[in-house]
Image (cartoon, rainbow, N blue to C red):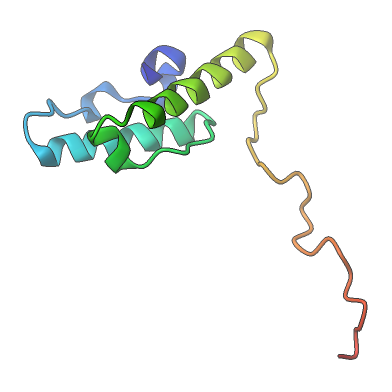
Length: 98
């Protein structure tokens, strides 16, 4: 599904057949990685994907849909930085001598 939204973020040869628990875990990690690459806000863990937790899977699908809608509307941010303020300390220290 992520490949349908952002094919440039998914390498098909990295996807394992999923015959073993280890391959399923690798696929889940890769799915989270691809979702991050495409700019999704990911609230799902690899465990949730492997165990197919319905609510968490819905969150992942909704995040991918949101990215897709932004791309289609031309609202995609080329730099998906959630904090537009480059200053990590927005408030000056009120007691500089303390």
